[in-house]
Image 1 (cartoon, rainbow, N blue to C red):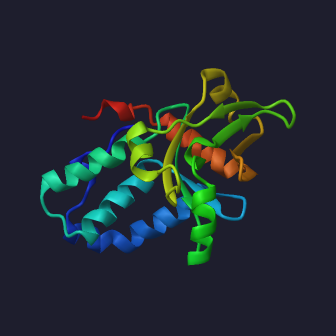
Image 2: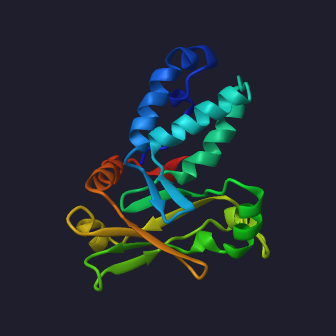
Length: 206
């Protein structure tokens, strides 16, 4: 997927004029790209639209006006762009009370290594486990407590990527303290396949 560049990020005045329309576009896109996995975990499948929105909103919130400031944000988010055959996700542990935080964040240490994609029929699916950037893992997870947001990636081998459109695809968390799964809808799979058709490499930036 083509990396985001400074040319993709509007200045503050231009972004403000089109912000409402862009927010509606992102909300609509996320309808098929946000997947609930059990009662307290969800993921958003990231692409250029979702990540551009994050950069624009960060620049707006922090009143960034210089190219070097924006470039720093692009350097953070561009590595999250998926290449063909990859699914890049932001994982959210959705807890709404202090009691839940105290209960679940210690129990879910290691959840960022527990996301898997299964392709194929029940009982015969092939499974691919996610990978996590070591720098991210060291920043967001400690031995005794995890974070509520994680970035993970699943790279499907060519044979499974080729079967992605036509076969049952399940996104699961198989953590010892949290085992839940969700079957991807046709709309979600179509959205991922559109990502994969954007063949400019996300790794070519920088």
